[in-house]
Length: 157
Image (cartoon, rainbow, N blue to C red; front, top):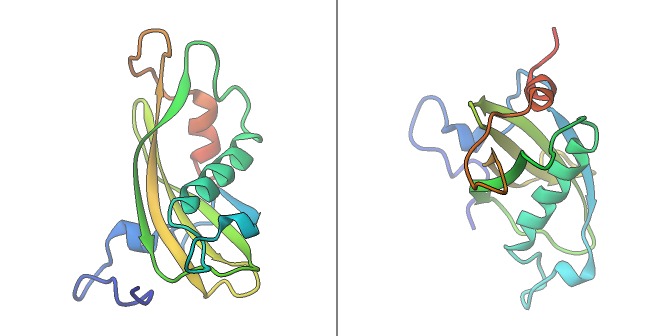
């Protein structure tokens, strides 16, 4: 496992997935997650696939506050994901998952994330991003990103 600083690619600006949530802007949302005993694997740390569940839960906590983010003709799907495992999570643990917006496209949003220890935000467990695309479930074709998502993802002055 690499340390949080060892993932940097040479001198200069780090790759966007390594900074995840922009330090100059407040996050879109911060979710609280409690690690469950069942999340552990045979090595007594959180299984790598469970991180995706934590991210899904954080996105759903955020989306609960966004009106009209889906309907019968526009629903989000996970189109891509990148997770950088920085250090293992042990049990018991309480986590904070900070979400940010890296990019708004015509039919998609790139959501960055940082999973940190709730008691010690400097303890970075995971960072990266996911791409959520909105599609019409009947046709399987991409549809425009809902205006409510655009508004919720745009920083307020």
